Image (cartoon, rainbow, N blue to C red; front, side, top):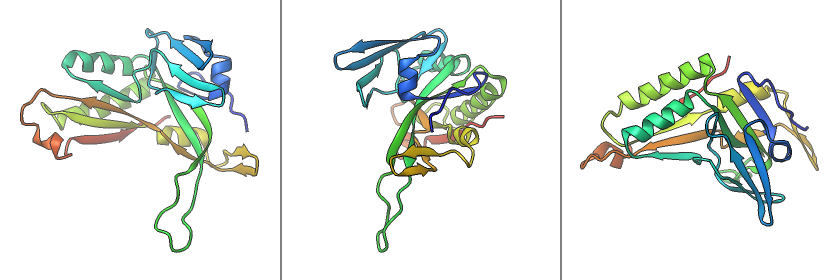
Amino acid sequence: MTISKVSRSKMSVTEVEEFLKKPPAGFTVERLPSGRRVRSDSDTCLVLIDDFCSCRGRVAFQDSLGRKVKMHNLWEYTRVRNSLLSKRIYLLMSACEESFPLPGKKSAKQPRVLKQYVVSIDGNDPYIRWEMERGLDWAISSVAGESYRVDIDLSEVLQMWAGRNFRVVTDNGSVTPVWTDTSFTLKYYSDALFDFPHWLGFSKRKFKLGLV
């Protein structure tokens, strides 16, 4: 099944090759001998995609902050926060074929990636903005003055979009995929000398975004 863009009001889901072939407003794609380089309008787009390899070579999002965003002071945090609450956020997610453990085995193999998609949500949408702001305030107030890590998970947003009947066509038929890479991470590094909670792993937080 080929996915086309859905409603632009809150969320869009686009196959990687379609995104690169027909980039949306705010993006340009340059072909290189080794792959493709993607530029974006930093005034309207917040790209959180690491470089990756596609069937046509390496894809580099030149203006991306990456899936793990590092911040070292209040100014950097404020800049990232304002971007999350005002721009369209872009992530790379994968639809995978679920693998199950064989009899007598403890765990399954890593799921096989079937297709990759560029997923975007509108951080300026009133509901998404409210959820994002509430989650960030909760994470920070609970680790005030410390280094911390917060994972922002979009799995519920994606599942709501895909529904139960969504399937991906493969060479062996169609399958209902499991979604991976559905979150991004903010890492704040405090200059506190004795940051014991962070060292001991107590300053990790996670919240999920919904979509109505």
